[in-house]
Image 1 (cartoon, rainbow, N blue to C red):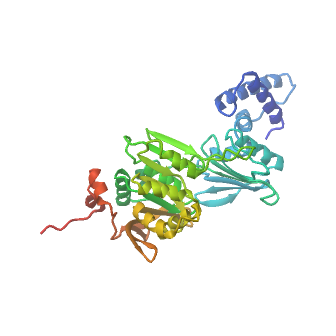
Image 2: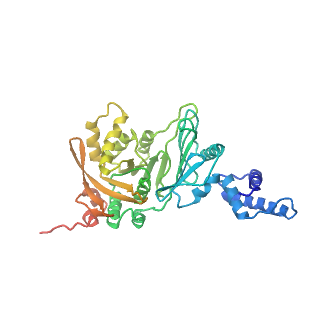
Image 3: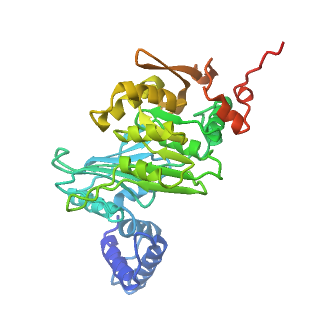
Length: 412
């Protein structure tokens, strides 16, 4: 960085204030102010008052990132190949590309990290302090920010920015990426259009949100979609869509809006479909009650297999209260969930659907039975013997399930 850059950045901030530019939303105007400041500087350099800049275009980019963006991190946020950025301590900044971790050469100061976190949170309406040492927030670019305050994290605040790199917007895009193949993609598209209840499972960074987003894109445009999330991440672009996110408590310790409240509110908004970004706790009960009442829906959940996802769906509702027991929950899950799609990430960073199972509705020894519809073997999804139980849902949607699954019926 050139030695004159800090002074130029201060000059740009003066121009931003004079022109009443909002640097958070008017990056183009900030760039024009930077170009004007550079032009002033170069004019003064002709008199010998200051040294001419060697790379003015580079300096403009640095100033815009510092004034309008997120300073030294902005280059990584603008890089489409970077999936995630995290700071373990100011001198150890990591990024992830294609699922692999890289230690960058970037070295920050503790003051720079604090300033960056404050700037990131300034547009989110969320706070971070001793009483609230954790925060999840949405950045203006659609990235998800998670911060753990110093004192909970040892030594320094731990910062994580998970970028939503939209490489896929539909199930056909997932086929192009190798996440699905044409038969399984056609099956999932048909399941969504038929109004089946679908759960997407997988580990961290396995591609659950992207898969859920692509499935939501198959919802017919004539239907009303209501989604609820901890932080806005879904970007399906449905024409009739209301998206809601949770809210943390204010300074008085009141005003919390959790996922359970949002699920209940969503049911009052005349939804044709409901999508829960990620089921983590007691809101699972409210989702199951909605699905069991006939409202089609989708959700994602952390699990290491489709079977374990069903087990977890039977466990999380028990957090809702002592009066909720497995004798009620297990058959409710069996009757409410139609299909579980499990996705994972290989050691080389490749994300792919590992299995698609159909829930049979039967329960044996408190375990929900399921049949494989597609299972990945030798790098490809092979057809299993399972099929969704609710065949009538496909018929009502005008879909021939046997044709979708490639089944040839025998006729005498």
